[in-house]
Amino acid sequence: MNNSKKYLFLIVIILLVVIGVSLAYFGITIIGNDTAKGNKVVTGNLELTFTDTNEISLENAFPGDSFTKTISVKNTGTKEVSYNLVWTELNNEITNNELIIEATCKSLNSSGTEGGTCEVISQTPVGNNIIKKNISIEPNVTHEYTIKVTFVDIGSVQNYNKNKSFVGKFGVEEYSLPTSISFAEDSWETIAELVSAGKISNYNVGDTKTVDMGKYGTHTLRIANTSTPSECSTTGFSQTACGFVLEFADIITKHAMNDTVTNEGGWPATSMRTFVNNDIYNALPSEIKNAIIDTTVVSGHGESDTENFTSTDKLYLLSTAEVWANTISSSNIVNKGNDNIAVFSLPAPDIINPRVGDSARNATRQLDYYKNLGVIIDSDYSGAIKKNGTTASGWWLRSIISTHSYHFYSVHDNGFWEDDYGVTSTYGVSPAFRI
Image (cartoon, rainbow, N blue to C red; front, side, top):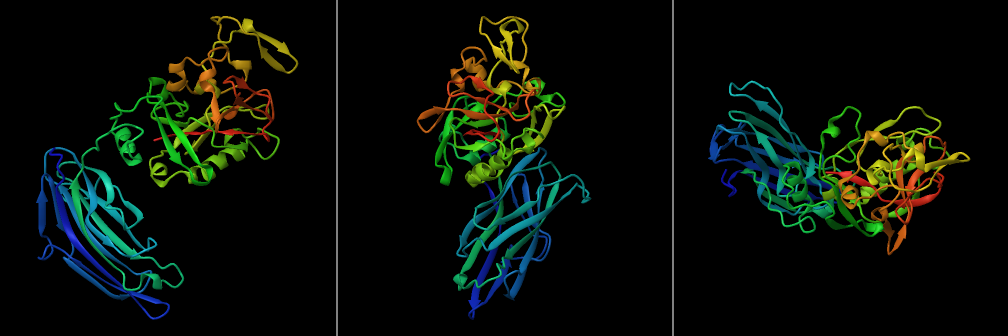
């Protein structure tokens, strides 16, 4: 495909005028190809067609009113291609994101019968030149869009948009992958596109990128994993160390694992899970949030439960197995009271879980980052050290000690595993996520 961008467009002209003290009015005119319904504009393998009249007007509209326009994009070639829905020109004076665009989509086969799927356009403010990116379309398939643009009624005076206007050209362009510079320099949109396409040769495990999290300050994200081994396809296997995983290389803040003295219900029932998937997630810039995908998270249980837990999260804490490889042998464990205490020696072949504690260790794998550093439980664990500012500090894991009713595992400030912090203790927060 020719990587030079080719455009098809229809012209959309919107004039917004506010009259009086509290009433807002605006007029809309959409102008098509200067001819009637059915006129086509062709570029490459893409063909843009108006499927209704080429002009629509809406006069004296109030906030809350909207207009619609129907267009079709057809792939006339012999190969599957991708395209972007765009504003080829954009001049929007309407403030506060009060003009929004959305669309439904029908996928029509060569005989015009609806079949298959195509992507809708979720409500988004008019302002970004790219409305929807990387839409795949098969040969002889038509995507029929019913586009709706709405002047939002916010329920109060909107006179700040008095005499404002919007002029834009709506169109279609051929899609091509962005060019990568490096993980540190690429935009999050570029990173997400390249990861989705499997084009990550420029991104290496251990690469870092800073992110401004507002009230939480500036922190460092690190590529923790890029591989997807076959075990990731096993039924019941956690996806937390599969695919393109980013983790915070430092500690964002401190927080209790739970509000009450219990680990009952596991990771899904903790206040920490709520905290990282709300407060921390919402502190991330929107371009990162847009790139994050849902992750199936398997975590262990405590004394009060009998089965492991599965949740779906945007952000999650790591587990013992995702940080440390296991090299403690049964001959290196002695019993002291209610805890198993490790006595270190050379690794032995009869490998067991650390302190026989994390019931979900076999449901996940070690992240590439820690594996590459050779991080293991009973030696070489300094690679698990994270800092809170300039000082090494401990950080929480989502793993539970199965023989306890109120403990979770954590990482000590020297990188070793630790289990003597109760759930109401405040400890470091350093989550991960996938894109």
